[in-house]
Structure formats: structure tokens, C-alpha cells
Amino acid sequence: MKRSAGIFLHITSLPGSFGVGDFGYEARKFVDLLERTGVKIWQICPICPTAYGNSPYSTPCSNAGNPLLISPELLRDWGYLKDDDLKEFGERLPEEYVDFNRSFELKDRLIRKAFENFMPNEYYNKFCETETWLDSYIMFLSLSKKFGTVNWSKWEKKYASYNKNALVKYIKDNKKELDYYRFRQFIFHSQWFDLKKYANERGVRIFGDVPYYVSYESSDVWSNQNLFELDSSGNMIRVGGVPPDYFSKDGQLWGTPLYRWDRIRENGNGGRRSGYEWWMNRMKRAFFYNDMVRIDHFRAFESYWAVDGKAQTAKEGVWKKGPGSDFFRAIRENLGSDIELIAEDLGLITQEVNELRDRENLCGMKVFQFAFDGNKDNYYLPYNCTQKSVMYSGTHDNDTIMGWYGSLDEWAKKRVDDYVGGDGDILRRIIREVLASPSVYAILQLVDILGFGSDARFNVPGTVDDRNWSWRFKWEWINESVFDDFKKMLTVFGRG
Image (cartoon, rainbow, N blue to C red):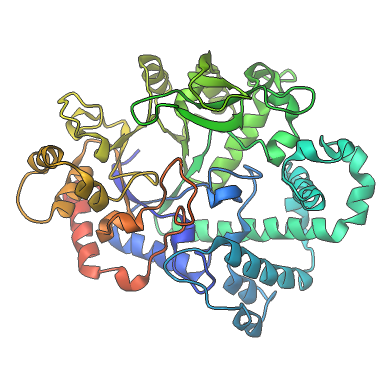
């Protein structure tokens, strides 16, 4: 690991003419900005399809790609669309935020037109053969459409579990629709790797994310029901969440099915040492798509909060032991020991969780905004951080630096001011402290470099709002002098 810096910006936040950021020319232009500035890491949220609420952390398939990120311009360049097709994209969509529903409707129309001009080739055929998750996912999409719900437990009984032999007639009768869904994933896959190659060739690594839990209403659960805590009717016996704390008197009830770790541990063992086949396939794909991976809700690998599936809040639950070091042994056996896996170790963290992280030699996360409660031993104060960590100005779930600072009371502001020292621009002083920290990696949100307030916040956890996940930037907001100054700071603090 080499001391360096990164910028967080999810792909949907890129500018562009099609209502949502995508893998096209604007993404390459952003990579050029990172290269020019000396930034070596581009951190993004998961790039899987989204479900209700448009959160990239809630998906109908953890291995699939979000078709919203497909670039119509690249489809034209590849000969599947014409210039006139792009002109017919439809009504002008907003530039400052994503209208997810309208963008998906209009973009899907273009992708379908591209599909009509597509002829399968050897690359497509190989993709369809090797992506083992693909068949169950496209069947899940098709059956969700047929029954008008993604809740597979409400489907006709013969379809409520994934059995390819029982679906032969359905597959034959719906071949064109299923082929369209395959095509969409193939195009996503192809465009993403063109972009990733472009970034890597310019010294920029992609830093992705793997959520711990998967959605109940997903092909992940539908096609692997034996690996989750479900009863004979497919209902969740217990669900995931976190217990009550200072921020939430009822805790957080996520409604995600719990893993049957005993079965997952044995799943796919077949004489091999590692086991954990379902999870290993998921991790392999994560490192296939990304150069570095943050594993969300890391603490659950030590212990997780289990709540009755019928509970209305997360108050009543029990801590259950996770797979611990055995899981990470399997990762090393399957993916090698040189992968860069970052532990999202925020929230209610115990000594046991810290010991697991350190035993597995993983970088943890430090968030500058969490450091100023007045405790000199605060875990997040930069002088308490070790090199084996990633320092953030704030994560995708935090307010912007300026929004956060503006919300502090006078005593908290004084603690921040005293820590960062000096006079003048508080934003610049905070950015300097983040970059100066001992942490091997320092990640700043683009909105923080731009100095925006709470109106540019990316997500407010625990809320469902059209503003969440929807912020986009414009190139006219990129001030070259600001980025020149940022580049100098990277050099001063050994991250250039």
C-alpha cells in the first residue's frame, strides 16, 4: 500500500445529457481530472441495479450491473444506435439531480433499440456461459414483471423457488425478453471494463463496495433460499439490523434475511478446503470489477444483531457470532493474500471487532466528522489514527464538511477550530488535516473539495427521499485553481 489520496463520487453523480451519470465520455473526463490532480483512487458506491428508494445498497441482484449506468453515446459509437436515436431521447431531464424513474424509462427505450441491432458474438456467448448468476437474475426480472411484484414468495407456487428444469417452457416462451436482459448485462459489463481500463492506464484505481446483507426481494435469495434464515413458506425467520444507540432509540431494522452461516461454510466445500462458495463467488466478482473493495458492516463478521422477523423495531434482538477469521481465510485461499480489502468498522464496535480487523491485517475507516466530542482519546482524531486506516472527510452517508461544520454548536466549532489551527478558510484547513493524517489513504468527497453545503448531501440514512442518491455536479463548478491547490497539498503530505 502506498500513501495516496482518493475522491468519492458515485457514477450517477457525473454530468451528462441522459439524466444520470454513466460510463461514457464524462466519466473519462473525470478520470482525466483525477490524473491531472494526482489523485490515485476513485471511490464509488456499488454499481448493481437499485430497488425501492434508489439506494445502491438495496438491489435485486448483488452481482448484476445497473443498466442506468450504460452510456447511449458508447452504444452509438459501437454501431448499435444512430445520432438520431440519441436526439430522440425525450424531454430534457434535470442536470442538477437524477430523476431516476424518468431516466430509467427513457434510457431503457434506447437500450431496447440497441438490442434490436445487436448480433451475438463470441464475447457475448462467453459472457453468458461464464456468469453463473446471470440465468437466475434474468429469470427473476422476468417473473417479477409477470407477477407484478419482486416479492417472490407471492408468486405462483411452482415459480417461488429457482428450478431451471421447471422453467424450460417459460424460458422458451419468453426467449426474447430474457435475451434482452442478458444483452443489457453484457453491455454494462463491456462498458464498465472499458472505463476501468481507461482509469487504470492513467494510474487511477477503482475503490468499490460490497454490502454485507442482500435484499430479500432479490435473485440472490430466491435462487439460494437454503442459505438464508427462511421458513418453509419462504418467510424470514429473523432479520438484520442494529440495536438502539445514541442516534436511534429503536435501533435500525433493515429487514434483510440473515445468513445460515453453517450452511454457507459447507456450501461448495466438496473436498476443497475453503467452503463459503456463494460468498466467495460474490467477492471474486467484487474484485473483478474493482481494484480495492470496502466490505460494508464489517462488524457482522464478528457478531451480528438478529431480530425476530415479525418485530416492528430492532429493540429486541440478540447478538449472534459471525464466521470470524475462518471467512477471511477462505478469501485468501480463493483470491490470494495481496487483495486490498477495507473494513467498514463504523458504528457499535467492540474490542472483539477491532481484534478481528487487526488479526486479518485490514485497514479500518476513520471519519474526521466523528472526532470532536471533546474526548482526547477519540478513535477518529487524526493523531489517534494508525497508518493502517483510511481517513475520510465524510462518507456518502454524512453531511458535507461545510454542512456539518455549520450545524455544530459553538463549543464543538471551537474544538474543530483549535484542532485545525490557523486563520481563514475552515474548509481548506480541514482538508489539510485529512490529507496530513497518518492514514495510508485519505478520501474526500468531491462536494467537500467544491465546498458545498448540505444541499449537496448525497444521502441521509434511515430516510426515503427523492433527494437521496440523486446529486450531480456540473463541470462549470470545477475551479482549476482549487484543484491546483489540492494537488499541491497532495505533494506536501506525501500523497502526490
